[in-house]
Amino acid sequence: MLIGLTGGIASGKSKISLFLKSQGAVIIDADEIARYVVKPMSSAWKNIVEAWGMDILKPDRSLDRQKLASIVFSNKKELEKLNNITHPEIIREIKDRISREPDGSLIVLDAPLLIESGLYTIVDYVWLVSVTEVTQIKRLQERDGMTLEEAGKRISMQMPLEEKKKYAHVIIDNNGQWEDTEHFICLYLLKKGEQT
Image (cartoon, rainbow, N blue to C red; front, side, top):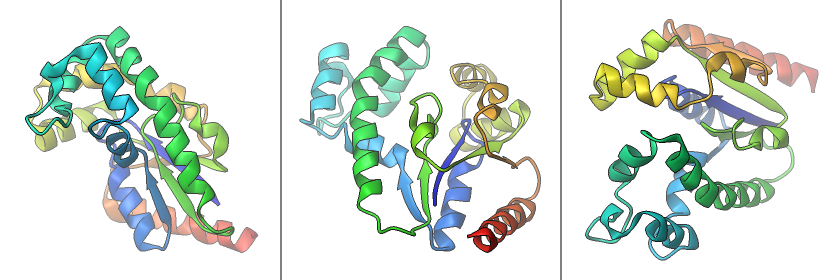
């Protein structure tokens, strides 16, 4: 079974991913792959440097992700340009890693842009982690030290949750206690296991 796990920023998706890993799932982390495909001297890295210049590099020549984020998350055209460079590389690597797993594995593709990138078409089920915007803002302020304006801007750059719900097979409400989320996931997996 291949599950596509997605959700907005600060929805708690990573915690759910870690829990699924503890239950024996193979996790394919799109964020980790996104970092992997832009390592120094890779083709995506070269295209990014060509687009935004050497100023977005750290002294070790790796990308200064914060500097790049400040550019692309304040301008949709810049974000689109970055996505056009990185997404084909990320998708290729994701498909390659999935193909290496044995049949019958429980694989979780943890991907914030699962729907936007079209990767939802390759999974069996789309799991959407749902939280209110108030919860997202609170978590971004606590976790990343963002201002209210920065958090609001970052959220506004993403596909609205209501739009994502149209693609979801399972919606996980992660506004409440973690124990409730965990219980919901366990019940779902148990039910699926009984059906196979």
